[in-house]
Figure 1 (cartoon, rainbow, N blue to C red):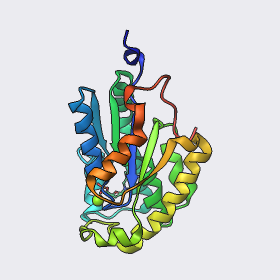
Figure 2 (cartoon, helix red, strand yellow):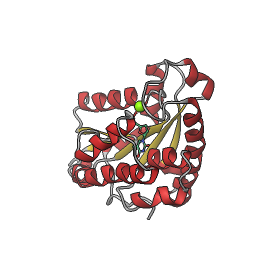
Figure 3 (tube, rainbow, N blue to C red):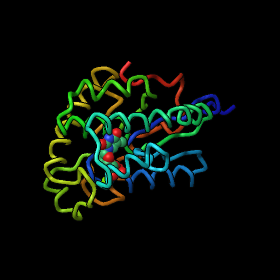
Length: 218
Ligand code: 2DT
Ligand code: MG
């Protein structure tokens, strides 16, 4: 019998600063899993397609202004409205790959000056990723890549502050959930080289996971 049939899908999150190659790697991973005949779903955060997502999109494009706390809570609400679908898919054996998650939520809002603990609270009890891969690119390499876009947060100052906050988020994940749940990926090199590293780090998670999904920050 196939042991994987009784397992739930893995919940794998990709995090990192802008221009680290995250979205490229996420789509390549989902495509590869599908080519191999596995069920996989890409979940982008923010999910700009929902009603809440449209408010977030307007904010990011500077078409709307919002209080820092309010937009922080909307990013979190945007995850909560997707949480049931993520859990349902995992239970059906589908691997869910997220492009950003609650960790971006904390890092970006804390970089703007909101208290770290305030930033963490609204995401408490969301599905806990089995693995978060933080794609790490040194400042110098990042600035050699293509120019930043037009969106809010896509500035050198903001990226630098967010980089520091991601370091604190990593510590917190490891302290509360264990070292193995957060792994840094060297994002330098070609797309294929980085893809190979990611493949190695994910290992047999794509075969499924035993046991219920846990809760974030609980
Ligand atoms: P993309 O460029 O990946 O579409 O992200 N962000 C994201 C937050 O400030 N809080 C969050 O909770 C999330 C998920 C990061 C758009 C920007 O939104 C930021 C970059
Ligand atoms: Mg962006």
